[in-house]
Length: 309
Image (cartoon, rainbow, N blue to C red; front, side):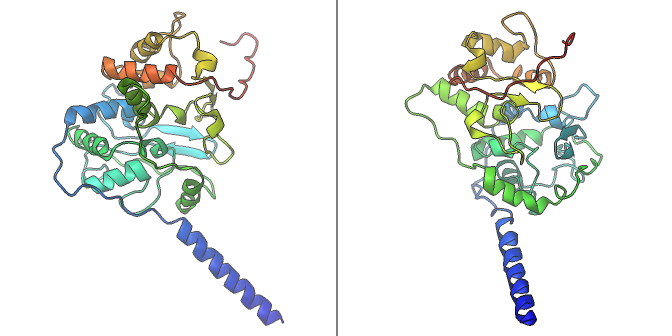
């Protein structure tokens, strides 16, 4: 009897481990057009600015936003992440990557070696980007200066330091459907929707998350605790921005100035440095889309301490 019990436990354990290993495997490498791409470098630069690549990957404490040697520390409830080197350096950067490597990383969150990237890298939003735009971004990155230097490993406690578990997280929370235009909306609205939900990844910060770090879909864009642990990220639906016109939003994305004369603070300052480089048309398109978001109640912000800012 004991032998049978032990055998049954071993079989169940083996089957369970096999299922776990299967569901946590990295997805298959996506198909990238075999035909040579005539890269649109200008479009790649636009995607670079829309995606805020410099905000995380530029070397900290220096003025050049094109030196993408990484190193920025990003705090989270799961530990501290360090932005990697995505410069064209062939040793520590992405200088030896292929188009397929880059597309797989950006849209699927998988490294060239087949390991899952942590979703601190907002591939959950980038997954909606067009492959052509991702390849143009890669072509633009290759025009930037290579930066040497290896970034330190993430500082994560167990079990978050075991990357294989991200496969389960992706099954639960990742929507990798490509963007589909809404025929009932204008071309500008669709452009704005594409930028906001794709490379712009606005929902990644402006939405509350559950205890596993997944965005709460019913409160998307409704604000919540700052993912980096300090402060509160505001609601950007019409629940809070009903008094803002599309022109107000577009001007904010260009200058960081609010309609009441106040200015952007916190991590939004880094975002504005990127959106200010977008074309006027793209900022207007993003504003048109954001202005159309229906009012959604988000989590209640904590009360400010007496005498606080």
